[in-house]
Amino acid sequence: MTTRRLIIAITGATGAVYGVRLLEVLRDMPDVETHLLVSDAGVLNLHQELDMNRKQVEALADAVYNVRDIGASIASGSFQTDGMVVAPCSMKTLAAVAHGLSDNLITRAADVVLKERRRLVLIVRETPFNLAHLRNMTAVTEMGGVIFPPLPGFYQRPQTIADMVDHTVGRVLDLCGVAHALTPRWTGMNGSN
Image (tube, rainbow, N blue to C red; front, side):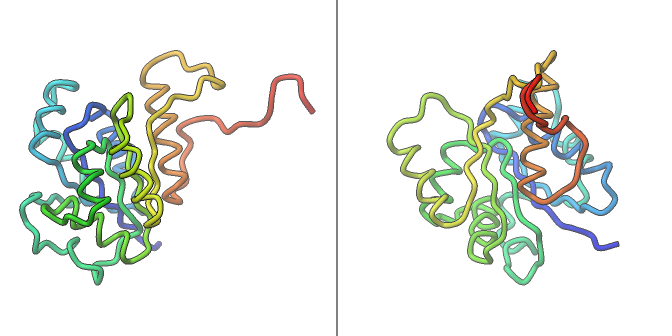
């Protein structure tokens, strides 16, 4: 069995649940190795939104890095990964990635993923978007990244917030090529052929 490596980053935007749920799902997949980064603002959101501390979320990952450790293995393209998901992605992190400002290990790892032509998914959390946000999203998209606002799908008739979170996490896993059974697949409109 070939082990896949995914870098997961949690930054200071609202929506820490997306990063945590992604880690929970991947933890149960023995063929996926997770490499975690949590910004200081991300830790604040974990506490505010989920009553979790840094150690609790770090326990969900296979490897953990300090965001100030710019010399870590994931800062180099020679460290093979299958991609990176920033869940959630703050507008600050988006801007830094869009402009190549590798000022911490999160943005450096994202820069490496882009330069190596690997999959980068940014679960951007802000609303409404201003022009700077939109231009930064365009720049990242032009570099090969995927901008993924966590917009819920209602065609599956979600009953809980957890259902909506799983829908987003499932879609992100699809983008990363990771098989899952989090949500049902669309099979067409009811009553259609």
